[in-house]
Length: 68
Image (cartoon, rainbow, N blue to C red; front, side, top):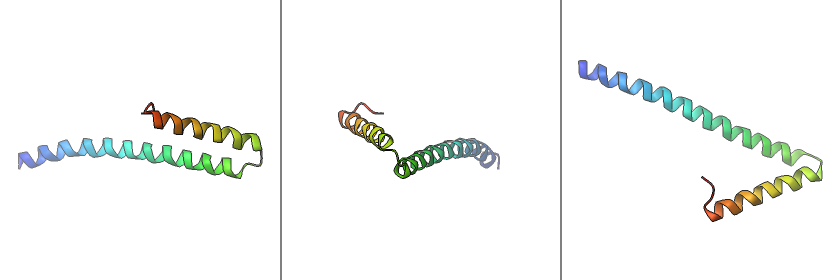
């Protein structure tokens, strides 16, 4: 039974790390989604213009393969 116990002791830290990473990714995504909704609901045209410029820049960088 020692081998099963050592296997469990290896899995537990991996699960903890995976949980932290997935939580962080979920939070980051929800932040972008919230920002996008806030920009869409904003009444100021300059905010929409700036958002469009950022989106265009990200699209161009992704097309060049420069984004990670």
